[in-house]
Length: 158
Image 1: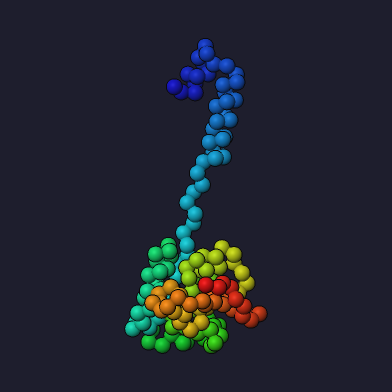
Image 2: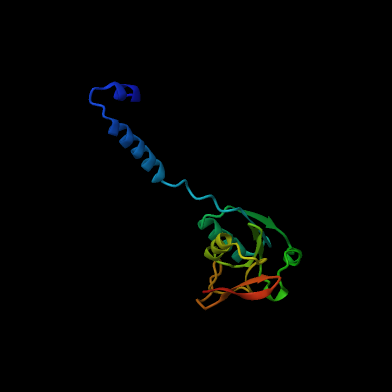
């Protein structure tokens, strides 16, 4: 039934229009939110022969990231230009959302970084921790380090 027909109906009462408007307003207010915006794409710079790097890329994809891979025989120029302190270097370097990600940083830490937007240059899982995503080593505790102009600090413990 059209709105015109409802308004002309002998059963129409003034309160009906208010109820219809309220229902429409509530429907709009409590409508499901649109899907969260997609995660930004990640560009990963890695050696073409590094298997653990490829496993880390899979870890990111499995966690909702779109990943572009750039193979390089020597990734160190990327690390240097991205400002990664040499004591935090690992096997690959990535960039996402204006941040640098060095090594096997878990996707959950990257998502947290992107949601919190701290004033840092990036995150690193220094070396190649055996328990980090993409590595097949024994479970062992490791830290993810935030680095930037004001130094280094622990960002997450795993």
